[in-house]
Image 1: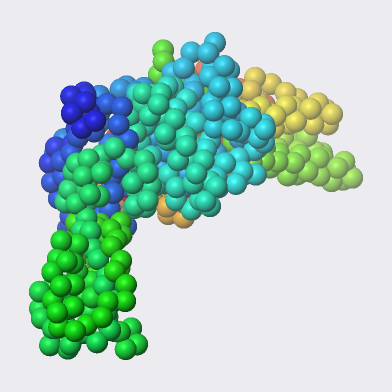
Image 2: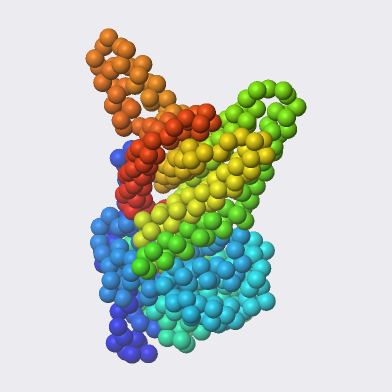
Length: 321
Length: 258
């Protein structure tokens, strides 16, 4: 899978992007993006992942031409992002999108279709197809001010697709949705991939990353900390084993701790968390020393732990356990 | 051509927004004012009833037009950025200048529609009261439209880079000064100090001379109107609008939408 994706054409290329924002009215500037680079390949769902304030939305706004980079270059389907005409190939759903709420679902899609250059004769059919695709035929002639958040998100996806773009950019598409809404959007994103679209998705929800994204880039404090295949990223997370002992000698427990084990007292018992490969040795030593084993539980580190470890926040990773 | 379609699409939507947000309801106030004046005058035996009616009518048309131009215009761009509706629109293949022009012409079209309705009501009331209607009345309305076009452009310019509160202060300020620059220049010419004469003359040249769009007196008193009284202000106004929109576009093209 990685080889085939590796050979696919680059759809998005970001090179050394820097963005400084002016602070207040003075000359002081704050660096929000610090020389980030990454690429997105044709047909993949690319997750741009990071905590709040990491620079995800700033990057996306630069790609959409809403703000301008201080340094560096970004191109989509071979065109510099400061051009406008190439946006015929690009669809965009902002975070918590707001649309003209005095328009109906059908009217807003017709409006965006005209702006996108869809020919007059094709607009009606295209809008009907999209309304059906996102499941909003029943609400097509209701004004958007009567739509729920999930419906707005779906009309948002429809407007992003109204001109049948090659690449779709989604900023936190699951934000603020209930579980049903999240599933609906997830299904729509997977259908986009089936239809051959490239999807670029900003998110901080790691389960969505695991379920949807082929590749990820992790951004923290304006710097890319990782770029690669999602499963490799998740697989890099430690596998661990929790062993619950009774009568574990304190001296031996101390030695385990010195070797990196985590200890937690549970009543008269002691739970020792060790890396999976060290579990057999720990068990042997403990049994030799007269300890009794109550339970042995192997598990993979949580997504949060993997993420926090990857972004260089080991203490926070421990806290997340 | 595609650019024109995009501008027209945005303009049509801006008109629809104004209609659905009931901006045209302000016409009711105009109608009440005009009819009220007519009814009041009919109860008085006053020799110049028609002139007073037309004076009030034309003043109301210009003030209503200006008020809506300013108070809708100041939020024209700012609200789009503030509500983030601009994000999805600018992600489509259109330039920021096209967006700006679409919004400008949309609001202008709304105001011209409103001006036409007010003009028709004014003409009807004048006919009912037996007041004369001349070419000068038509010319006064055309120049009122030009003044509105200039005010919308100024409001749009301020809306591009500042908040509605500040934009309204700037635009209302320019509206008031714009009606006084001639007086200011004339006063300045009487000064003994050369610098004051120069400054007041410069202000008159640089700031919009909105009194040049006022033909109300000629219309109400049936005074003759030369062709140059109309086309010169139209050329002046159009040139001013183009410059103001160009400045707005320069700022807007470089702005970060954070």
